[in-house]
Length: 186
Image (cartoon, rainbow, N blue to C red; front, top):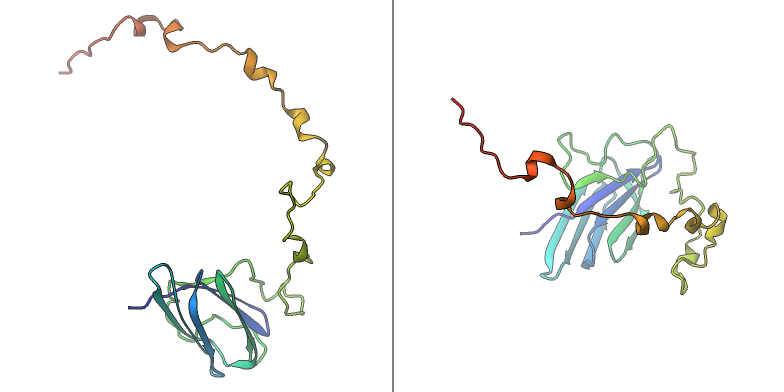
């Protein structure tokens, strides 16, 4: 019996982002038809469990303009819509969405918030600098710009001068003289 991988999705006016979450997938096969049928199959895990997926997308798509990237942790697809417009949902059917299909809130943009570019906004990040973290483990970042030396705020003398006493040395009154028996209730 095959399993279903987790699927995350988000959309823009002209495309749909579909991410199939399946780490270390082997023999991954993705197919997309102009009618909007998205299929995936592959195996993963130490026991090579078989995973399969068939999604009937809400509308027709442009297969030639769509892109697929098979990565180590997931399969990322940019599905170009045949006609620009916001879909009410990912799937064609009116019923409940399968439990393994979820909204990708990291990529989601509301219809009234889209700037018109249609591209996924990565915030202008330059990912080329993430590879060389350097010997200090922080990529040569200068933390002095964040308000001075953080070690100035730590007063190490507080812990060393405090006296710690054993529980038996405290004056607890009658409670330490012995146990009292509770009177039977009537």
